[in-house]
Amino acid sequence: MRLGIMSDTHGNIGTMQSVADRMLHEFHVDSIIHLGDDMKDTELLNTDGKKLYAVPGMYEDAWNDKNVQHRMIKEFDGVTFLISHTSTRDSHDRKGDMNPERARSKFKADVLLHGHTHRHRAVESADDGLIVINPGHLKDAHDRNSPASFAIIDVNKGNLSVKFIGLDNTLLGEEFFDLKEASIRNE
Image (cartoon, rainbow, N blue to C red):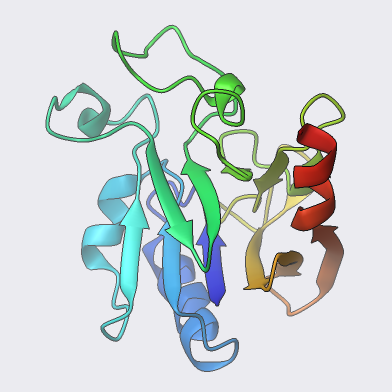
């Protein structure tokens, strides 16, 4: 299964759609995930019928809508993902919102996807083996000293690979994780 991950579009609709088109036609993703700021941008996104998952950023109107989940748990090819805008609880959270810092212990997530910082990264937590991935941002060509980027995640038989792609098609980084090993360390 292949996932296209984007975040922090901040109204940059043209770039967001261009990246989605690449995800769909160049990388052949099965689903697209938008990690907030601004979730409302996805209302204009053409995904060619592929499934789209989106969560709001905490300064969006959708964050205050009681009918909109701040975070969600989804399983893709046997791997459990916690999808969130932030990697930690936030003062804007509602009572009862999932705590991303308990993704592994409480929600049995293998992977935490988040945005917010505008910096791409993929790391494995030394504490509990949780894989934490941020695709970067699509706000501008550069923001917060980071180039615009998105992520392509391949989930295959307990393995997870992440590629960070810049707008100019530069491979900004690549990580590989053996989720079976992480599971063994966590037991």
